[in-house]
Image (cartoon, rainbow, N blue to C red):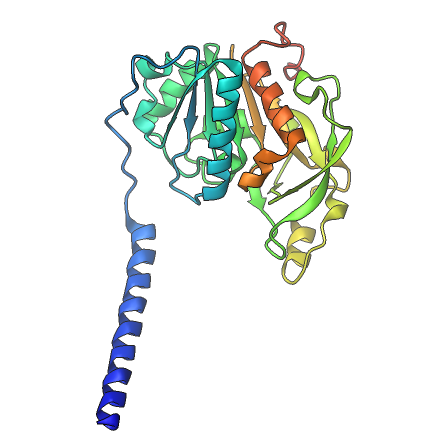
Amino acid sequence: MIRTWTGAKSLLTAVALTIGLCSQLAFAQDQTDTPIVYDQIPPHITKWMQQPAILVFSKTNGWRHNEGIAGADKYFVELSRERGFGIFTTVNSAVFNADDLARFDVIVFNNATGDTLSPDQEQAFRDWLEEGGAWIGLHGSGDNTHADWPWYANSLIGPTFTGHPLTPHFHIIRVETLDETHPIMNGAPKVWEHDDEWYFFDSHPRDYGLHPLAGIHETDFKPEGADVQNLATWAMGENPIDHPVIWVGCPGEGRSFYSALGHSDLAYDRQTYRNILGNAFDWVLKKTDEAGGGCPAIE
Protein backbone atom coordinates (compact mmCIF):
# COMPACT_ATOMS: atom_id res chain seq x y z
CA MET A 1 0.00 0.00 0.00
CA ILE A 2 2.81 2.42 0.81
CA ARG A 3 4.50 1.76 -2.51
CA THR A 4 1.18 2.11 -4.32
CA TRP A 5 0.41 5.42 -2.58
CA THR A 6 3.91 6.69 -3.24
CA GLY A 7 3.53 5.84 -6.93
CA ALA A 8 0.12 7.48 -7.08
CA LYS A 9 1.46 10.54 -5.29
CA SER A 10 4.32 10.79 -7.79
CA LEU A 11 1.87 10.50 -10.65
CA LEU A 12 -0.36 13.21 -9.18
CA THR A 13 2.68 15.46 -8.72
CA ALA A 14 3.73 14.91 -12.33
CA VAL A 15 0.21 15.64 -13.57
CA ALA A 16 0.06 18.78 -11.46
CA LEU A 17 3.40 19.98 -12.79
CA THR A 18 2.31 19.26 -16.35
CA ILE A 19 -0.94 21.16 -15.88
CA GLY A 20 0.96 24.06 -14.34
CA LEU A 21 3.44 24.15 -17.22
CA CYS A 22 0.65 23.99 -19.78
CA SER A 23 -1.17 26.79 -17.99
CA GLN A 24 1.95 28.95 -18.04
CA LEU A 25 2.49 28.26 -21.73
CA ALA A 26 -1.15 29.02 -22.48
CA PHE A 27 -0.90 32.25 -20.50
CA ALA A 28 2.27 33.26 -22.34
CA GLN A 29 0.68 32.44 -25.68
CA ASP A 30 -2.44 34.37 -24.70
CA GLN A 31 -0.35 37.42 -23.79
CA THR A 32 1.50 37.26 -27.10
CA ASP A 33 -1.14 36.22 -29.61
CA THR A 34 -4.43 37.65 -28.38
CA PRO A 35 -5.43 40.54 -30.64
CA ILE A 36 -6.36 43.83 -28.99
CA VAL A 37 -10.12 44.37 -28.89
CA TYR A 38 -11.14 47.98 -28.35
CA ASP A 39 -14.16 48.77 -26.19
CA GLN A 40 -17.19 49.61 -28.32
CA ILE A 41 -20.01 50.30 -25.84
CA PRO A 42 -19.49 53.42 -23.72
CA PRO A 43 -19.95 53.10 -19.97
CA HIS A 44 -23.12 54.48 -18.44
CA ILE A 45 -22.47 57.89 -16.91
CA THR A 46 -25.34 59.12 -14.83
CA LYS A 47 -26.96 62.36 -15.93
CA TRP A 48 -26.74 63.37 -12.27
CA MET A 49 -22.91 63.46 -12.27
CA GLN A 50 -21.78 66.65 -10.58
CA GLN A 51 -20.31 69.31 -12.85
CA PRO A 52 -17.56 70.23 -13.53
CA ALA A 53 -16.14 66.70 -13.62
CA ILE A 54 -12.95 64.62 -13.79
CA LEU A 55 -12.49 61.48 -15.89
CA VAL A 56 -9.89 59.07 -14.47
CA PHE A 57 -8.91 56.42 -17.05
CA SER A 58 -6.85 53.40 -16.00
CA LYS A 59 -7.17 50.78 -18.72
CA THR A 60 -4.05 48.64 -19.23
CA ASN A 61 -3.01 46.47 -22.15
CA GLY A 62 0.52 46.57 -20.76
CA TRP A 63 1.80 46.32 -17.21
CA ARG A 64 -0.88 47.09 -14.59
CA HIS A 65 0.30 49.13 -11.60
CA ASN A 66 -2.44 47.96 -9.24
CA GLU A 67 -1.24 49.80 -6.15
CA GLY A 68 -0.45 53.03 -7.99
CA ILE A 69 -3.81 52.99 -9.76
CA ALA A 70 -5.63 52.50 -6.46
CA GLY A 71 -3.64 55.27 -4.79
CA ALA A 72 -4.23 57.78 -7.59
CA ASP A 73 -7.93 56.92 -7.79
CA LYS A 74 -8.23 57.64 -4.07
CA TYR A 75 -6.26 60.87 -4.39
CA PHE A 76 -8.48 62.22 -7.19
CA VAL A 77 -11.65 61.25 -5.34
CA GLU A 78 -10.38 63.29 -2.41
CA LEU A 79 -9.36 66.17 -4.70
CA SER A 80 -12.72 66.15 -6.48
CA ARG A 81 -14.49 66.48 -3.15
CA GLU A 82 -12.17 69.29 -2.09
CA ARG A 83 -12.55 71.18 -5.38
CA GLY A 84 -16.30 70.53 -5.81
CA PHE A 85 -15.93 68.35 -8.93
CA GLY A 86 -17.76 65.23 -10.00
CA ILE A 87 -15.59 62.20 -10.83
CA PHE A 88 -15.90 59.11 -13.02
CA THR A 89 -13.31 56.31 -13.02
CA THR A 90 -13.25 53.70 -15.77
CA VAL A 91 -11.21 51.20 -17.79
CA ASN A 92 -13.65 51.42 -20.71
CA SER A 93 -11.99 53.19 -23.63
CA ALA A 94 -15.33 53.70 -25.40
CA VAL A 95 -15.83 56.71 -23.14
CA PHE A 96 -13.50 58.49 -25.57
CA ASN A 97 -16.18 59.86 -27.86
CA ALA A 98 -17.08 63.51 -28.43
CA ASP A 99 -20.37 63.42 -26.51
CA ASP A 100 -19.00 61.78 -23.36
CA LEU A 101 -15.74 63.73 -23.32
CA ALA A 102 -17.70 66.98 -23.49
CA ARG A 103 -18.94 66.21 -19.98
CA PHE A 104 -15.44 66.35 -18.49
CA ASP A 105 -13.13 69.25 -17.72
CA VAL A 106 -10.06 67.19 -16.78
CA ILE A 107 -8.90 63.77 -17.99
CA VAL A 108 -6.38 61.77 -15.95
CA PHE A 109 -4.48 58.87 -17.49
CA ASN A 110 -3.86 56.86 -14.32
CA ASN A 111 -1.04 54.46 -15.18
CA ALA A 112 -2.77 53.62 -18.46
CA THR A 113 -0.45 51.34 -20.46
CA GLY A 114 -0.43 49.68 -23.84
CA ASP A 115 -2.58 50.21 -26.91
CA THR A 116 -5.89 51.01 -25.23
CA LEU A 117 -7.72 53.37 -27.61
CA SER A 118 -8.91 52.76 -31.15
CA PRO A 119 -7.92 55.30 -33.83
CA ASP A 120 -11.33 56.99 -33.55
CA GLN A 121 -11.04 57.15 -29.76
CA GLU A 122 -7.52 58.57 -30.03
CA GLN A 123 -8.78 61.28 -32.39
CA ALA A 124 -11.68 62.12 -30.07
CA PHE A 125 -9.25 62.63 -27.18
CA ARG A 126 -6.83 64.66 -29.28
CA ASP A 127 -9.63 66.94 -30.52
CA TRP A 128 -10.93 67.37 -26.96
CA LEU A 129 -7.48 68.29 -25.60
CA GLU A 130 -6.32 70.56 -28.40
CA GLU A 131 -9.62 72.45 -28.27
CA GLY A 132 -8.93 73.48 -24.67
CA GLY A 133 -8.95 70.32 -22.57
CA ALA A 134 -6.85 69.60 -19.48
CA TRP A 135 -4.81 66.38 -19.17
CA ILE A 136 -2.80 64.78 -16.37
CA GLY A 137 -0.67 61.68 -17.05
CA LEU A 138 0.81 59.54 -14.30
CA HIS A 139 3.79 57.16 -14.22
CA GLY A 140 3.01 54.16 -16.47
CA SER A 141 1.06 56.42 -18.81
CA GLY A 142 4.50 57.55 -20.01
CA ASP A 143 6.14 54.14 -20.48
CA ASN A 144 7.21 52.78 -23.86
CA THR A 145 3.97 50.94 -24.71
CA HIS A 146 2.39 53.88 -26.54
CA ALA A 147 4.41 53.84 -29.77
CA ASP A 148 1.30 52.96 -31.78
CA TRP A 149 0.02 56.51 -31.09
CA PRO A 150 2.75 58.90 -32.32
CA TRP A 151 0.88 62.09 -31.41
CA TYR A 152 0.51 61.01 -27.79
CA ALA A 153 4.04 59.62 -27.55
CA ASN A 154 5.62 62.77 -29.01
CA SER A 155 3.32 65.62 -27.98
CA LEU A 156 2.37 64.64 -24.42
CA ILE A 157 5.16 62.32 -23.26
CA GLY A 158 8.10 63.11 -25.52
CA PRO A 159 11.13 61.06 -24.39
CA THR A 160 10.91 57.29 -24.66
CA PHE A 161 11.10 55.24 -21.46
CA THR A 162 14.18 52.97 -21.48
CA GLY A 163 14.01 51.20 -18.12
CA HIS A 164 13.91 51.38 -14.34
CA PRO A 165 15.94 49.76 -11.56
CA LEU A 166 14.88 46.44 -10.05
CA THR A 167 17.76 45.75 -7.64
CA PRO A 168 16.54 47.36 -5.52
CA HIS A 169 13.23 48.26 -7.12
CA PHE A 170 12.55 51.40 -5.07
CA HIS A 171 15.08 54.11 -4.23
CA ILE A 172 14.81 57.22 -2.07
CA ILE A 173 16.05 59.92 -4.44
CA ARG A 174 16.45 63.67 -4.13
CA VAL A 175 14.05 65.49 -6.45
CA GLU A 176 14.94 69.06 -7.37
CA THR A 177 12.57 71.81 -8.49
CA LEU A 178 13.78 73.05 -11.89
CA ASP A 179 11.37 75.96 -12.32
CA GLU A 180 10.50 77.60 -9.01
CA THR A 181 8.40 80.26 -10.76
CA HIS A 182 5.94 77.80 -12.31
CA PRO A 183 2.54 77.67 -10.55
CA ILE A 184 2.69 73.87 -10.38
CA MET A 185 5.82 74.03 -8.23
CA ASN A 186 4.42 76.71 -5.93
CA GLY A 187 5.24 75.70 -2.36
CA ALA A 188 7.46 72.78 -3.38
CA PRO A 189 10.88 72.65 -1.68
CA LYS A 190 13.90 73.36 -3.83
CA VAL A 191 15.01 69.79 -3.04
CA TRP A 192 12.99 67.01 -1.44
CA GLU A 193 13.24 63.23 -1.07
CA HIS A 194 10.82 60.79 -2.66
CA ASP A 195 10.69 56.98 -2.63
CA ASP A 196 9.51 55.48 -5.92
CA GLU A 197 10.25 53.39 -8.99
CA TRP A 198 12.28 55.74 -11.18
CA TYR A 199 12.02 55.95 -14.96
CA PHE A 200 14.94 56.59 -17.28
CA PHE A 201 14.39 58.04 -20.75
CA ASP A 202 16.28 58.16 -24.02
CA SER A 203 16.16 61.94 -24.42
CA HIS A 204 14.97 65.20 -22.86
CA PRO A 205 11.42 66.69 -22.80
CA ARG A 206 12.77 69.92 -24.28
CA ASP A 207 13.60 68.00 -27.46
CA TYR A 208 9.82 67.69 -27.91
CA GLY A 209 8.86 71.23 -26.94
CA LEU A 210 7.91 70.26 -23.38
CA HIS A 211 8.91 72.17 -20.25
CA PRO A 212 10.58 70.29 -17.35
CA LEU A 213 9.57 71.21 -13.80
CA ALA A 214 11.46 68.71 -11.63
CA GLY A 215 14.43 66.38 -12.05
CA ILE A 216 16.32 63.85 -9.97
CA HIS A 217 19.83 63.36 -8.63
CA GLU A 218 21.10 60.19 -10.34
CA THR A 219 24.02 60.02 -7.91
CA ASP A 220 21.54 58.95 -5.19
CA PHE A 221 20.95 55.57 -6.83
CA LYS A 222 22.62 52.63 -5.10
CA PRO A 223 22.19 49.82 -7.63
CA GLU A 224 23.00 46.17 -7.05
CA GLY A 225 23.64 43.26 -9.37
CA ALA A 226 22.73 43.78 -13.01
CA ASP A 227 21.46 47.28 -12.31
CA VAL A 228 25.02 48.54 -11.81
CA GLN A 229 25.52 48.21 -15.56
CA ASN A 230 21.90 49.06 -16.39
CA LEU A 231 22.08 52.43 -14.68
CA ALA A 232 25.41 53.15 -16.34
CA THR A 233 23.75 52.47 -19.70
CA TRP A 234 20.56 54.39 -18.93
CA ALA A 235 22.29 57.36 -17.30
CA MET A 236 20.95 60.72 -18.44
CA GLY A 237 23.28 62.95 -16.43
CA GLU A 238 24.31 63.78 -12.89
CA ASN A 239 22.48 67.11 -12.81
CA PRO A 240 18.69 67.09 -12.18
CA ILE A 241 18.10 69.17 -15.32
CA ASP A 242 19.51 66.23 -17.29
CA HIS A 243 17.00 63.77 -15.82
CA PRO A 244 13.54 65.40 -15.61
CA VAL A 245 10.64 63.42 -14.13
CA ILE A 246 7.85 66.04 -14.26
CA TRP A 247 7.04 68.24 -17.26
CA VAL A 248 4.25 70.16 -18.96
CA GLY A 249 3.05 71.07 -22.44
CA CYS A 250 0.36 73.15 -24.12
CA PRO A 251 -0.98 71.21 -27.12
CA GLY A 252 -3.23 73.46 -29.16
CA GLU A 253 -5.50 75.36 -26.76
CA GLY A 254 -5.11 72.69 -24.08
CA ARG A 255 -2.63 71.93 -21.33
CA SER A 256 -0.84 68.74 -20.34
CA PHE A 257 1.05 67.58 -17.26
CA TYR A 258 3.09 64.38 -16.99
CA SER A 259 4.74 62.94 -13.88
CA ALA A 260 6.87 59.81 -13.88
CA LEU A 261 6.21 59.45 -10.14
CA GLY A 262 3.43 57.25 -8.79
CA HIS A 263 4.24 53.54 -9.09
CA SER A 264 3.00 52.86 -5.55
CA ASP A 265 -0.11 54.02 -3.69
CA LEU A 266 2.22 55.45 -1.06
CA ALA A 267 3.39 58.15 -3.48
CA TYR A 268 -0.04 59.75 -3.24
CA ASP A 269 0.16 59.98 0.55
CA ARG A 270 3.24 62.23 0.49
CA GLN A 271 2.30 65.84 1.07
CA THR A 272 4.81 67.42 -1.31
CA TYR A 273 3.60 65.26 -4.19
CA ARG A 274 -0.06 65.79 -3.28
CA ASN A 275 0.52 69.55 -3.39
CA ILE A 276 2.20 69.32 -6.80
CA LEU A 277 -0.69 67.28 -8.20
CA GLY A 278 -3.20 69.74 -6.79
CA ASN A 279 -1.31 72.63 -8.35
CA ALA A 280 -1.12 70.71 -11.65
CA PHE A 281 -4.88 70.21 -11.56
CA ASP A 282 -5.43 73.95 -11.20
CA TRP A 283 -2.84 74.81 -13.86
CA VAL A 284 -4.13 72.50 -16.61
CA LEU A 285 -7.60 73.97 -15.94
CA LYS A 286 -6.14 77.49 -16.37
CA LYS A 287 -7.27 78.43 -12.89
CA THR A 288 -3.71 79.66 -12.44
CA ASP A 289 -1.49 81.23 -15.11
CA GLU A 290 -4.41 82.10 -17.38
CA ALA A 291 -2.09 83.91 -19.80
CA GLY A 292 -0.02 80.76 -20.35
CA GLY A 293 3.31 82.08 -19.15
CA GLY A 294 4.08 78.62 -17.78
CA CYS A 295 3.65 76.99 -21.19
CA PRO A 296 6.78 75.89 -23.03
CA ALA A 297 8.36 78.67 -25.05
CA ILE A 298 7.53 78.48 -28.73
CA GLU A 299 10.71 78.62 -30.75
